[in-house]
Picture 1 (tube, helix red, strand yellow):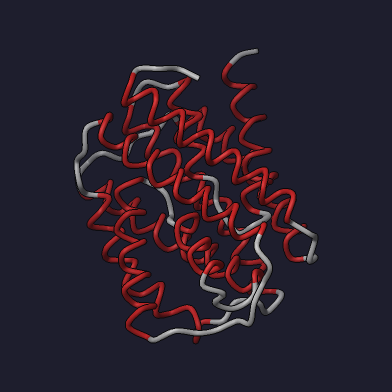
Picture 2 (cartoon, rainbow, N blue to C red):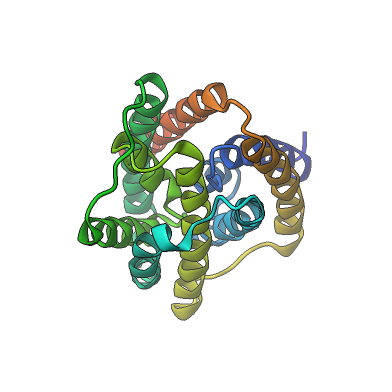
Length: 252
């Protein structure tokens, strides 16, 4: 099967899985494209465009269903935007980039698994400075790794029992959107934004369809536990593959 057909099909299902739990899928887009494409900057730029497509749908859905809450979300979002911009401007080697991404994905996968297997306890809020610091830190790593960062932020907030799962998913969606846009501007600022227009259009259409389905399931209060565990397994595989491939030269 040709790449023009295979990649959009794969990405449709990736977008469906990720959007159902408030994510954009950027981590998996990066890893999958690294198998088929050779231009490192093209891979990074395309992943951000796809992320923006998926989470724009999710954000609109959450706003429409009144799950989005700016008063709760702004301390995470505001500091993350400039730091994502700065992180995206860091010119890392391809090997360093994928080693950082792989490590962060494994940690995220473990956090996601913990989220779905543990019993929920009483929700609690925490101090403003902690929210500001966490948002800024995650935003910076999001910029470095070329994704929106929701996959890092959401598991942490779930483990800390901050708000309910749908509220956290809506925050993750908005967080990914603003930081993907900020990261995109960072790439433009250092002239590393590049993509194949024909392939990218096909991929955008695919993730748009997948994102619509996943966001619909999420906002209909569909039980996403199984999808979440499958997503965690996918994230773990992607992280391990990146570490083994770029750290040890082993393909799995």
